[in-house]
Length: 66
Image: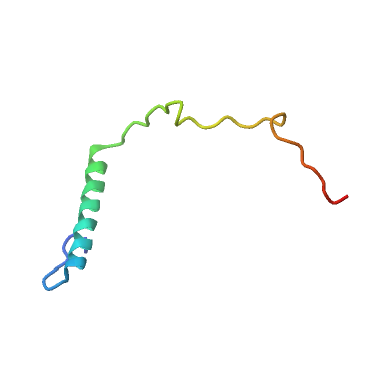
């Protein structure tokens, strides 16, 4: 609430820009919250998690301390 109602009279341009960006972020977040939950998209093959490595695909460790 403080950011949305901040009096920027006499503030320098960088401070005004900062508060303007923060207000935009807050408003975007509020709009998203009011729009409701968004459905989780089905992952495309490029976004799908990588398959777990099996023990057969992991190289054996080599003990060099002999």
